[in-house]
Image (cartoon, rainbow, N blue to C red):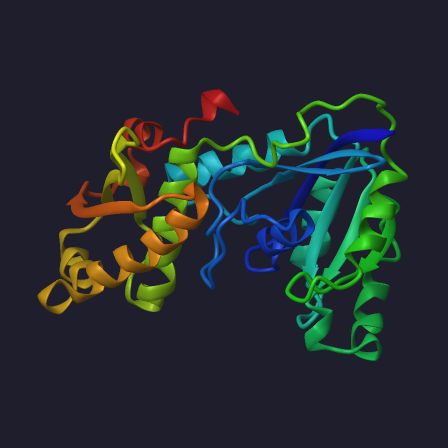
Length: 294
């Protein structure tokens, strides 16, 4: 049996969370077309007959502009510490830029790096090979594995490669545990995901979810959640005409939450404004982004 820890790194929107969900065949990390959808360091635990891989999903690598960004950058730095391997995910449909090479150099020192070339379903090997030659000078890259997270292609090969870098013979988590997130955290993330998808470009990244009440003592689980915005002008966008947008977010979130809990759910959403909350250390911490816990 082999077990160990593997960090998943990469720039925004390369499909890190989609990859983790596909490997686990469970939804542990939300996805959306918006950069920096993932904010926390999230554990995803993969089990099979041969061992256990503890994956650490991370936010997309980007320049910090506020307190929330600083928290996300720290999450990346702590995730790559003391791991057996790093999966550095790139988008096969995009060119490998100098910034990508710079990030690979920065985050892969003294590490076993597997370059995961994602979204191969949208391109060809002939197109990606010339780009990959740009990485020839990087000695930290031990393997290159092309995959399609969206279509779950070549993931078995990726698991095989990962296991070649694992050395422990114990399991860190029970077989029935697939994430370290609490149910409340997962519910909050589901709500945020639906808001990101439905609002698309109408709303910047300044949205967070706070679970105000979570009552499982009745036949129907009752959940009250606050959608936190950083500008008063965003409130009407989230609520929508006659409350239509808020209702739509609630309906789609409730459907996924019921699947997660295996129970009927009554979900009530409220919209609140905390001006410029991403630049407030105390508010960022109160919403669960506490760098002291990383």
